[in-house]
Every structure is written in C-alpha cells, then in structure tokens.
Length: 179
Image (tube, rainbow, N blue to C red; front, side, top):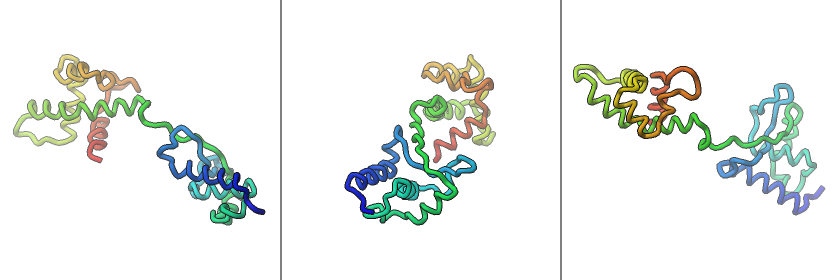
C-alpha cells in the first residue's frame, strides 16, 4: 500500500505539532492510553503515538515506514490511541500569580527581617519564613501594609483555602527562587 502525498502531509503535520509542544499549548495531541486503567501509558512518546496513528489509519509504506510501526503494533494490543488537549499555560492560574507576587515581595521582606533580627541570633530560612508569616498575619505591621500597597492581598488573605499561608509555603517560594 502506497502513501499519498496528502496522507504524508497529514502525518508530517501531526509530527510537527507533537514536536513543537512548547508552541502548541492550546491544541490537541495524540497519546497512548492503557486500556485497563485509562491513564497515559508508561511507554507513551510522541513518536510511538504517531506510529500508532499511522498503523490505525493503515498507512504502513512510504514516509510512514520510517516510524517504529512494529513497536506501535505491539503497544496497541494493551493500549489505545486517544487525543488529549495540551495543558494550559501558567499565566492564568491564581496560585502561580500568587507565587509570582511572593517572589517579587521576598527581597523587600528580607531587608526588613535583617533590620529587625537580633545580631546575636543566626539567620536561617526557617526563622525568616516564620517571621514573614507572623508579620503578614499582623495587619498593623509595616510588612503587611507594604504588601497591601503593592497589590499582594492574596499573600495575606489566603484565597485558595481557609488557613493563612504557612512558613512551609514561604520556604517553598524561596526554594523556587533558587532553582
């Protein structure tokens, strides 16, 4: 069976869209799903998904012959081909916006902490994060007023739950800054 130019072009477009996943945030892509669990197969990759798609539509010659069709055939015994939407970008998620606000505010909080911290005590991340948690919880503190003036209300009032942001949450934000 020979492959037509139109079929080759469709396979190529699918492969290009799978390769360019960073530019393909709002589009769908092919994945192999385990038939029993319905979860993405551990052996899933864009190349195997493309080969499985070529096998499903019956394209086994020409350009499609360059794909690992034998391996795809074996995978199709216990897996099925499905189309999934790519995950969304981080720009719209509230938790990521709050994290960005925290990272922007942390240097100012570090300066305030250093000014108020006793000289004879060792400065640790944990002590800094505990201090930040206490200062932001206190509505009369300079740190809390500064955060409100900068539009960081979500750091003070936890909109994602009923508890205020913990020292552990602040430690995670510092860790994100370092990586």
